[in-house]
Image (cartoon, rainbow, N blue to C red; front, side, top):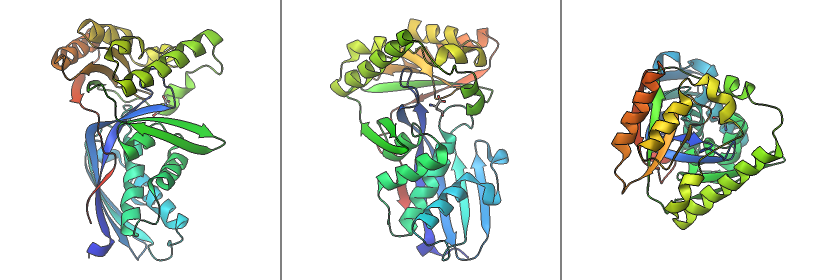
Length: 311
Ligand code: HSE
């Protein structure tokens, strides 16, 4: 049944948005991956098969997010009459609803795989525009597409992204608690306006974070991961958050933050410090003391973004 000409396999990294002070604009790609094996069909069947993280809860049929991305690109390039369905096979490693960009991987995978099958009519910036439209914000889809760190700016509905590889060799420690957190809820607890003091707090740190990463100034990073715009309000949604941050820093982390809208917490250290195991154990222990079961992932920054594995 599979027609190889109409098939592509892609790998897309999980991501961590915000990175502390960069609310809704900074993101980074990590070395945990979801895989999509996509076949475009001329008939109208949408077949979804998934294994791994959250497999039992992933929508089948036309409600599936990857299908929606595939359909969107088919519309964009005016080929929706040619391909009316798809076989979507997913192998997922990125935990669902934990702030590691699982929905972005589903969207980006669908766009990149379908674009490849269609002969690459769209470039990565076009794909970023469609992915941002589908996801609603750019801070996870941008690193999922480009890899590395990304800075994204929305201007009258259009997205502009700068992506770069940090000159500090970072290790990422992600504490994954055993509960999900919806982004909608995590946004509902945020205030409608913030003080000038808090705005300056974040603008200065976000700027310092990017400057330090671009220039390889590890010495400036301990200042740079703190936030006053979203984390203080989300604290009540992640029991033990402050204690986990403190534990990570006491174990030697340069800084710690909520990953995206949570529930994962992420700490940053350098490759050469070799402190990642110690930091991971301290974070899991601090979560435990707050009554939360968790596991730790030790990851690197992904350098490639979404990649075609085979055609
Ligand atoms: N920047 C978004 C938020 C990320 O923190 O709400 C959601 O994935």
